[in-house]
Image (cartoon, rainbow, N blue to C red):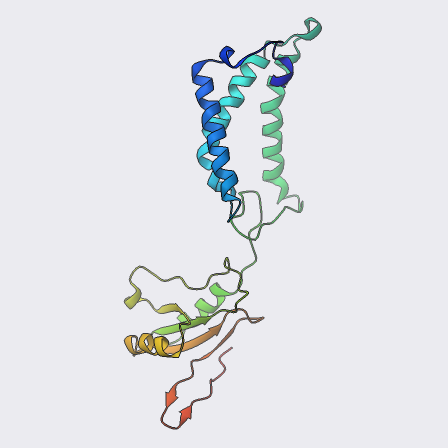
Length: 217
């Protein structure tokens, strides 16, 4: 709307120094955000720009407020309508869950008004392991096509004192080093990308061969 009401012959010099600084910051940040699209982008990456965007919107609305085509307060109506529409949208989305209105969902980093991804099973598995006696060590094996946002390997700050310790599968030799370190724990192998995830007792090398895994769940 501001671009419509700007007078003919409007130039960069007509903009105040403070507003020009905001515009420069906006476009410099925009270039950086576009660069992120090459790898991975999430909305919160642009969060530092929020204050700049709001400032530019308010400056534009301040000028739009005095727009009076055909001597009618059109600009005043628009500037009042904008926050009203925002408030109505916020309230509508807030009560959508109570009205059983379907909302969008995202596979990762959902917004406040979106459903997050369905649980991939970690919480349920952790709850089962915590019911077992003694400490537990879970070696997690992923497939090559594993969804990076379905991550199982998180540990408490004091790993050695945790009831359950999670680790990624690193191969037999390095796994054995980890098992030796946590030698007083029961060791499990979690095949995370099976449907449902499969938790079995970790196979142990012996002088007679490999002990068959015992299915747990």
